[in-house]
Image 1 (cartoon, rainbow, N blue to C red):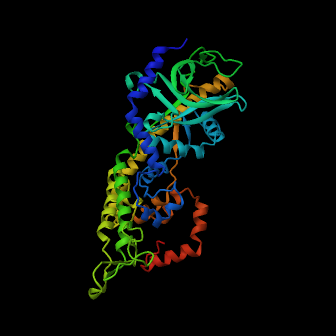
Image 2: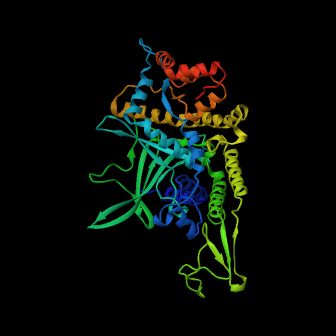
Image 3: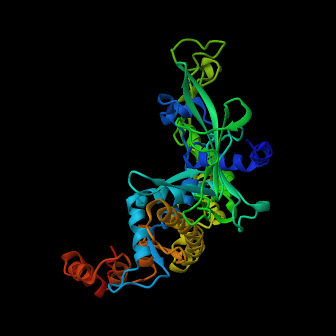
Amino acid sequence: MVDAIEMSYLDALAQSELDLQSDIALCRRYHEGKHDTLLTERMKEFLGLHKNKRAQFKMNLIRSVVTAISERLLVSGFDSTEPADAEGVKLQAQWAWDLWQANRMDAIQVDVHDQALVSGEHFVIVDWDAAKRRPHFTPTPRYTDTTAGGDGYGVLMVYPDGDIYSDPLYAVKQWTETIVVGGERRSRQRRTLYYPERIERYVRGDGGGTWREYEGVPPATAWPLPWIGSDGLPLGIPVAHFRNKDLRPEALDIVPMQDAGNKTLIDLLASADVSAFRIFKAFGFFPTSDGKEPKTDGSNAQRIAPGQIIGSTKGPQDASFDAIEAGDLSQISEVLSQLVLLTAIVSDTPASRFMQTRQVSSAEALREQREPLEAKVVNRQTLFGNGWEDVMSISRRLSNHFGQAGLDESQRLTTLWSSRQTLEDVAAKRQLGVPEEQLWIEAGYTQEEIAAMKETDEYRARSMMRQIGLGGEG
């Protein structure tokens, strides 16, 4: 029997958080470069956008704010509290890493981390793959309703009194699917509720209406689906929640800065288009696009463009030819640079991520710029690491129930993060004076590989240049 009260509560919950969903949908759109920009027809022609109606002109700062964090979030393995065997291997930690690789998470983790930062939340649903006899991971976005600019697809996690630090009550996945009935394609809405001890499936028409029980494709499955382990205890909610700090989209606060930056860049290009070149003034005649007399509707008037000639209606006795010199664009360019710098400050992203300026050229300034980002990375490693630990704990429980794996569920699993550095990290440390050999060690090169690199002609040449005081950082 459908729990009408629970269904009504979920519908009301979705409505009450539409503002949050609108923010999520906005940040997703801006992350993908779909910005609100206004261009004149001349600018569209100048930028070549008239050839592709879907193309947009923008300077995407928001993506850089997100990727500055996510590219530093790379899981390198798992540890466990169990004792190691005679060969120094912790079996559950190795099991978790083998499962990670079997699900090809090396690549998929990037999307999970990106989307958790972009939307403030992301989810991984864990189910049992009977054919491969192992858990399977399905990354799923945070739910956003179509009335909030979303796609009507995703997951919500429901907590008691909205307390995200307590155990969740259940997870909800909702989406729209297309089916064929009597040769006709129809849409309908689906909703699945994941409780610790059961799974309930619902369906209703795409236009809304009452939710009804959905038993699945014949042969029908039990409703609700029991979710109980072989020990008689609940298997637990098979959904792991990846939470960004405060459940906020990472770049939400810089959307206005993104709009201001786009507008200023457009203004700069528009000004360059009409004033960065000499424009000639003609007195005594009016140049037209077809060489004929000017039409009253202005249809043959020449448009302003670099090297353009503009005229007036003065008589032939006053005819003359002059020029308007090119305008100074440095002030607009400086405004754009300041907007980019403010974006870096507001988002705690190193300004060097966007541009090289006098303000961040010193080693001390560079160090100060990087500290907030490094703090954010450590924080997100903790938050997202908890998510991956939940994924593995769920997987272990399912492996014991469906695959008789015999894993000790009392042992705690811990996410390990890679220390692999970005090119930006290496450049920053080199500027701070970190020796090149130390950078190689931190990058993961072995002593044998380092010894081989030190024997190269390039390294010897740089060493010699440093000795005679010519730098050689290269």
